[in-house]
Amino acid sequence: MREKAYLVLQNGRVFEGRRFGAVGDVYGEAVFTTAMTGYVETLTDPSYHGQLVVQTFPLIGNVGVMEEDFESEYPQLSGYIVREACDVPSNFRCQKTLDQYLKESGVVGICGVDTRALTRLLRSSGVMQACILSKLPEDMDALLQKLADTPALNSVPEVTGLRLKEETPENPVVMMDFGYKESILSCLESRGLAVKVVPADMDAEKILAMNPRAVMLSNGPGDPALNIKPIQTIRTLMDKKLPMFGICLGHQLMALAMGASSSKMKFGHRGENQPVIDQRDGRLFITSQNHGYALDIDSLPACAKPLFINANDHTLEGVIYTDRPAFSVQFHPEASGGPRDTAFLFDDFLKLIQGGKN
Image (tube, rainbow, N blue to C red; front, side):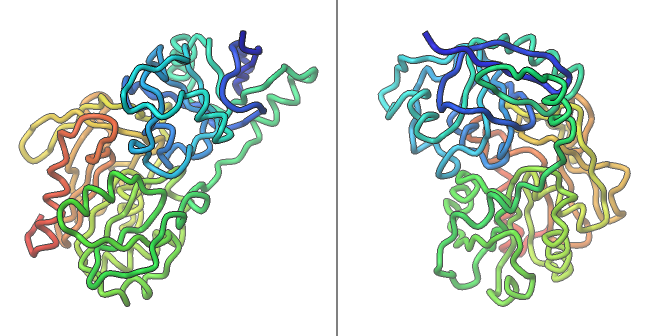
């Protein structure tokens, strides 16, 4: 029998469960993902850095853990919250159980939680700070005050520059690393593009000195407005009219560099079933998403036009720039996990690099 553990939310709600994974107490923002598959990708996605992730799908761990599905070298989230953690996976690719992997990686988990009730609470009240504890404190008011006083953190410095290669290809596609997923790199390289990954804080002058063919802005965690220097760098690169493609956080940073603004969403979009509508022809695509902030559509400059709109809540999901070879999407066309309906956007980027137009 697993030992008891407790999930305490900032609003005072307590969920009792059982501990699995590493031993310890952890703090972070509680968010939920509706993804039914791809929990290994969720665990290793840098965009979840520092968060306590709730899986709405009730059974997690049934296929074990496979390194070939990793989106980074190790888990990025602070804590993992599930209804049922499977101890006996069935998968010919399985290398270890979920519990083993979390223990080895130092990630605290809690299972046996009523994740349906928890998700309904987060949807109605909004995401909030929380903690997973081995036992409840005597002074609950002090704990709740600590959670309430937790400031918004810029997590990009914690995840950038960890997977760089020394060599620089000739005329590379430079990918600014805000916490990139390996699948994005694979989608670029599979199209014959030589990619140079650079840290998020690299100066524009150093990037331009590489004589890049184009610039890729990766996904990443946190509030886009906190990335002051990267926003300035992106503006300089955009003024050079280099082909540019942004995904997730990269999408937001590109727009902020052009004068737009962003705001925090109530509970964000995290999952593999978000419908978006292409504003050019009305086609609908199902997309994989992971973000807690969105661009304010009314703040876009005149040269920026909506490219995709979310069919559920009408938030901005993509932008195309009419005065330069640049575009961006809020969702993840590389998927992993999730639908690959929009993988063609990497082909569109390739066409821009080859001299095409938006």
